[in-house]
Length: 484
Ligand SMILES: Cc1cc2nc3c(=O)[nH]c(=O)nc-3n(C[C@H](O)[C@H](O)[C@H](O)COP(=O)(O)O)c2cc1C
Image (cartoon, rainbow, N blue to C red; front, top):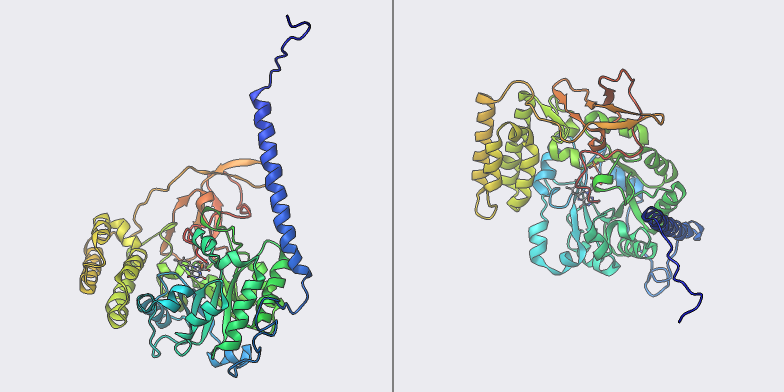
């Protein structure tokens, strides 16, 4: 017999367990964040200029004397014509015919897509497939690479150094593939690696090296990072005003203020501002807001490659805007010119081109969904350039004969947004009002809407409340493909 010992049953409420687990998860999360930030803050304490003990040019195992005489950053910038409007690097999308098209319409500098340095250095097929250029239309040109090893990036860069004006290092790619390959924005905590790559290229190449960075949340760290890039030899710095975490649904608005601070801080090299461009007016206002030497656009150019020429009927992103017949016809005409003039002249993989066509004529495909199916059915290996051109001419003819004059009807997706301004919440239909009369805003939930503050205003329908402030990071509509 067991005396005096009775089992004690303690009732633990499931709610208490849930609260405990939640608290545990939050505690771990915040301590990890604090740890990460702490680790990053150690960079602030590094001596300047940053020198890396494992860099062969810093530790004396190779001579740091440049193999070729190069102009200083500003002389270099002047020698390429002080470009103002820049086509961003875009994987599979900033290929030669697209760059040439953008240059015809106002772009004054273009980046190639990002190439993997290992593949590029080792595989002639990869080079032929991914890279082509033509000096008559394609200068100035920066060719971008990713990688985590100085000698590999150098080996890749040697293949292009006679065909471009600078070689750029991708420090922005936030995708999982970059995490696995240890490149792009996943080097933001590996200053030794970044430094070594830039230092290697700046010593060994005939042409300057440049860098395209993302920002940190922390201003001091961002400025220190930019100084490190400059000191490692970057002749131009492009600043994408988003952090690495700002991608996909978390993309949000670029921080132009942070870009401005980098520009004010780094005076010895030209700085290019990147982010928040929807149309030409934004390019102008971004230049004014950041004080940068040039402004770079990616996504908006995919919708309208004529953006930098301030076109009379600009085609805006189809995710938020619908447009009238004149504007839709302008989009189809741009696609025809891209295919029939530029791709015909500079042949590239038609897979790149098909992706361009989908965006350039998106608005007409909304009106004629059967044409979307037809385009989707084309197998790029079995379809000729002429068939694509015929498709586009058919689409143009359809628009002329059957396209509605006004904007087409498109139903907004998702629920109305509940937005809080001063702590109180209320239901609104938020609309983005563009300055162009020929584009009509779609009522969209605020949470799926990005905007271009320079040219747009938000109104609340049916609430009688004045325009409200945006949440700090509204998801931006034109950037679900943020790659760099
Ligand atoms: C389709 C696509 C491909 C991209 N590829 C690259 C790339 O190869 N290298 C890079 O540095 N950034 C890349 N990016 C990021 C852009 O260069 C740019 O930094 C980003 O889109 C922000 O500019 P935006 O607001 O004008 O779109 C890509 C963006 C898009 C939309």
